[in-house]
Structure formats: C-alpha cells, structure tokens
Length: 148
Length: 110
Image 1 (cartoon, rainbow over the protein chains, first blue to last red):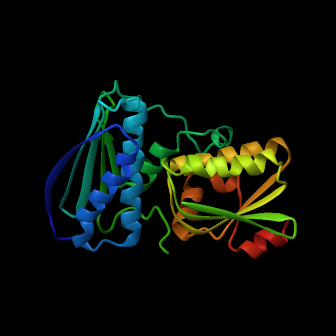
Image 2 (cartoon, rainbow over the protein chains, first blue to last red; image 1 turned 180 degrees about the horizontal axis):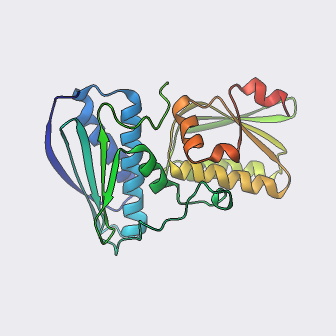
C-alpha cells in the first residue's frame, strides 16, 4: 500500500504536441517520491500522453489558443488524473474495436483502447470532453508485462 | 530518436534508438519512406534501443507494413522489451507483425 498522499494539482497547457511529453514528465517527477515500480510509471506515462494527444487533436483540433486542463492527485493508494479539452466531446460508448481483424490495419483508435486496458478505472463526463483515469498504486490491473 | 540501417545477407536491418511517439514517429516514417521507395524487400526492425512507444508509433509501424505489402516486401520485428511486446499483444498487432525474440532468428527465417 502506498501511503503517501499528494494534494490535487492543476495545470493548463496549450494544444501543442511538445507539451504532451513535458506534462507527462512533470507529473512523473511529482510521483518520484512514491518509488513506484517501472511498469506502473510506464502505464501512467503512456495513458497520460494518449489522453493528452486525444484532447489536443480530437478535442481542441490543435488550436493552440485552446487549453487542455489537467488535474491529478494521489490519495487512497490511487493516482487519479483528469484531462479536459474544450471540444464537443466524443461518443466514448461506441468506439470501434481496434483489435478485430478488419480494424487491425487502421491507423488510429488504439489510444483509448490502451487507456481502457491499462488503467484500473476510466470514466468520462456525459459530454465526453473530460476523461478521468485511475491507476491503483498497488494491487491493480496486471495489464502489462514487467521487465526492462 | 536515432535511426540507422545495415545490410546483412540481403536483409536490411534497422536499428531504432529512443522513444517512438507523436513527436518522433513522423521522422521514423520518413526514414522508412526512403527504404519503401527503393522497394527494399526484407526489413528487420531491431527494437533493442526502443524504450517507449505510443499509439502514434504503433500506427506508424502499421503504415510502414501496409506500404511494404504493396510491393510484396516483408517486415519483421525483433528484440522488443517486455513492456513494448505487451502493447503489441494488447492491441493484437502481434497478429499483423512477425515478431522475433532475437535479430538472428528474424534474419535466419527470411
């Protein structure tokens, strides 16, 4: 059980792709003191970057003047992060399955699928422009193989 | 991200170092466009130096594979870390790509 708690932090970033990496690095740096295992950190980094990418590209249409809002915290053995774009939202309940044979060669659709597979809980607001992702810091999904 | 190629027994070995993500995937695609224009018949991408890949990177690999199939080229992947291999398994891309543990195995089967 990870006992440390972290007060909620909020960020607003422009819809520029170089902010995707910068933001995930800043958040991971904040989590350093928790000494999380590499696989958990890999999953958190990947899911944050996938969600930011979707928010910028599909939500804000890469309009640099539109911000992406990020809120994250650690509490009750959970890392939770909310990512909000300024778009109309999307129909998260009816996304094509990228793993079926007819979709395997498609160039998109894997980001949300990976988030749903790797995070322990994923929720959206009704509009579909805010995603909330939760990763248990111990005892969560074993969605990815450990190793180097 | 760094990219270099080498030829061995008629197979073009591609070594990628670093992270393949939304920022680096276009450069990777460009590097492969040259090989595809030359209709390079057999390519092995060695992932030993790849530490991270996101859905943009996976999509770029799918694009490379599709472009190679147009002229009958064959693409194989080797030396994936367990985390990156997991992403291929989760997304079922392991059904699309021929994935080998070691580069030598990928070459010898060609």
